Image (cartoon, rainbow, N blue to C red; front, side, top):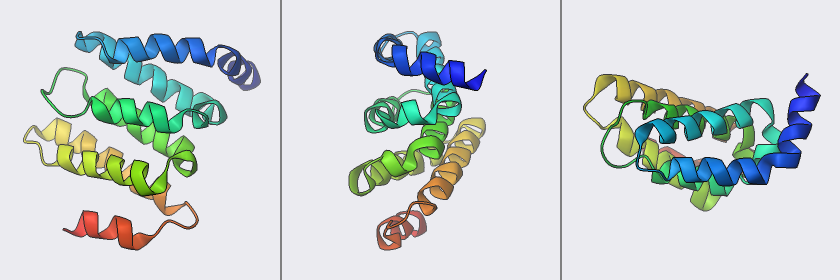
Length: 147
């Protein structure tokens, strides 16, 4: 029942977001992975609910990308892609979208092949989502990818 899921998420989203944020900021990689999976699921099942906090959630996900590659870190890429696909129009183009693309490009340069592949897939999904937004200036996006 998609309507029931959306309504439930709409009612409890703030509480879910608070708990999931704590998990994302935890030191244990298992919790970080679980948090990314929750944000992915919310973005997939209730994009209208996710859109209200898309900038904030995207900022938290992107902040977790740099640093050591831990088992399951690729779930962050899935979450970034899902949030972009569901809420690209709600993310600040000048700062948010550019920051996301920069972060994904940096992760695409990592040496671990599975990790790099996941980063490239997230970048692809992000670029497709961004290209669908009216008014996005290609002069901001294209030079980042070409350089």
